[in-house]
Image 1 (cartoon, rainbow, N blue to C red):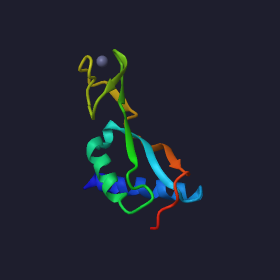
Image 2 (cartoon, protein in one colour):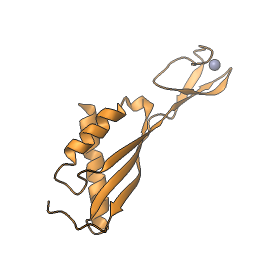
Image 3 (spheres, rainbow, N blue to C red):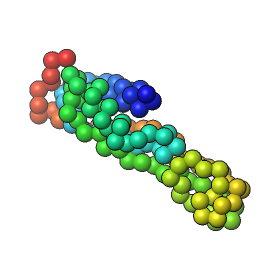
Image 4 (spheres, protein in one colour):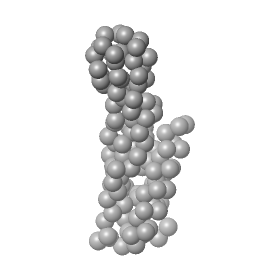
Length: 120
Ligand SMILES: [Zn+2]
């Protein structure tokens, strides 16, 4: 399952980042995911909660912000698309170029250092 691999990668990055800051607790991770990634946000958040069990990110909230794709249409200019497309969502023209919508990046990690680090 493709979301499971992503969930593990996010967890690894978040934990490594938190450990650099003293290995406390992670309370929240903000993630930007492009719609062209084909990720179902609810599934990813669920799987993140699953892989985070027993780590310093246990119980952390994964907040997912979806990045729309942008279609550059010769007739309409830039149009937002909610998924992969080969035609303009506004006028149906095939003379388009799809840009963006493929992001996968951690925007921020909230670390609570008022709590003691958990034993791994
Ligand atoms: Zn168009």
